[in-house]
Length: 71
Image (tube, rainbow, N blue to C red; front, side, top):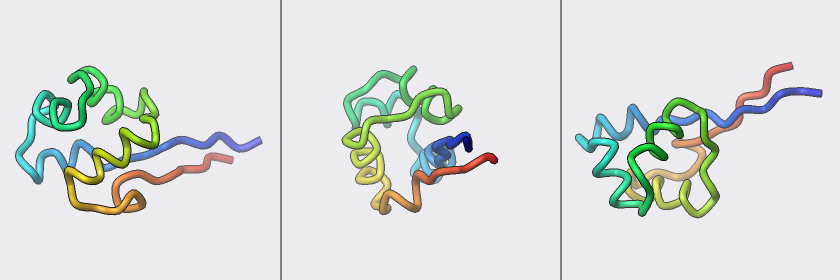
């Protein structure tokens, strides 16, 4: 069975938009720790949270989050 991981560009995009983890967290209604965990790949956001993050960056889901499959 393959291991699937959700990868993301949140840290890169946050830097591009000149946002701190705290600022992004406030925009999407979570804690700074949640944003840090998402960036490290330790936390998989809900669909609603992922969509809200994408909305902040004005990008579609597939340009912000994607699946990595490890055989």
